[in-house]
Image 1 (cartoon, one colour):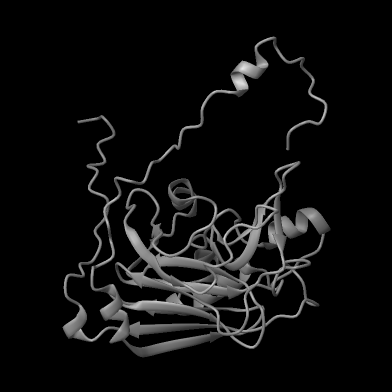
Image 2 (cartoon, rainbow, N blue to C red; image 1 turned 90 degrees about the vertical axis):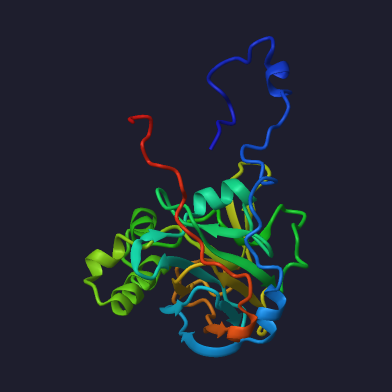
Length: 288
């Protein structure tokens, strides 16, 4: 964080330098519309084809075919979840939270698209419904569904506390991916990545601009729903912090399950949906 007492005196033109105008780094007005115009009909006629109930302080994976809907729901009590997305047939292609954040901001909601990492950078899924969209931003600057944080992990925990904790979201996702993909846990860990913090209420403090969390407003029945633009595998950890009102790597916080459901549209409603393709950049990087 920035120093409360800088080591260097401000120059005489400091105020002028600070008052330069803001420029949005990545204006999104030119992004193509990815949702079919009949997406509401697709969802209305969709039938549930699969579900995974994620136990507290554990994680689970589920496959979501292109054109299907993934719904993540709160059940039993307020609970946040850490979400990873992989291309089902190539888990080296995965959700790119940093670029998604640069495009849409610190917190995402209906209409925002989750992109994959370079060099693929394709649309993996778009949020189609968010029962917590009413929350907006509060007086502390907090909101839900952030792409700021990484995920609670045993390495940071070890640095801060000196203890080993195996039910943080990084470890939960590692075990779940290893089991789902049938790969060694050491290989699976390399594919676990920065997350979408589903239902988590976070922001940056006004004074030190540190990442903060507050008790999530999520309640049983709340949900976040996506349309898959290609075949994806979702991994979700029910965070050991519960609603993350106190701490996020804990065996004492009240924790609850999270439900993942996949809904498949009626073939007659697929209409204009087309699967997303990898980014068309030629990857020459200036070396013809």
